[in-house]
Length: 194
Image (cartoon, rainbow, N blue to C red; front, top):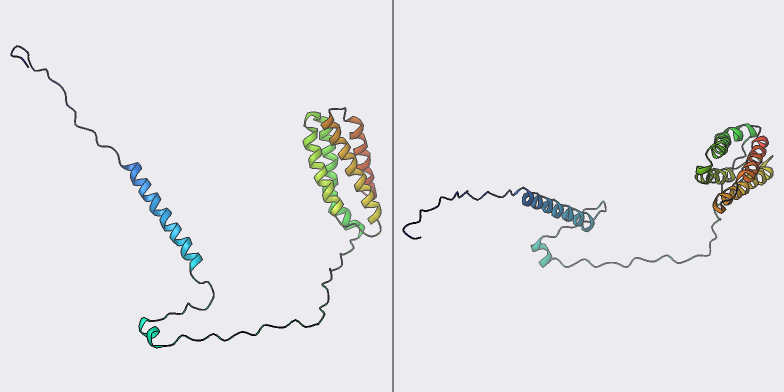
């Protein structure tokens, strides 16, 4: 500075201390991770059988000879025949209890076809759900008195649903396929007395 210049006052602020919260959380997180890794390693490395792990003292291991292992005899294959496991017989439900079992899905199918009629733009998703229900219906064991008719009727209903889904995929008018699916569903319902 020259003699004529006055010193200019400057404000000097003390340096702000940086917060160590982030670093502290990282340290805590890494510590927890390390403990978790150690716990997992201990879980997998420690023996889990009910017998306690043998403990050997340093003085005993120096003087005591190691036990010899005795060979375990292996069983030889014999020509004995074991009976093949048989499947338990599938109970033959009566028609009334069978109708009660399938009625919720059949009622849902009626409502689903109504929804397709009311919401043609959402019809493809509804038909997918109806196809899943039809697959579950075909897997349901029917009474022996209607078993073959049940299989045929459900198969026909499922194929009409496939045609309805194809109509949506092709962009054609689905009304004819929708009517066919409704008629096939009604045959299934009539077969079980609903």
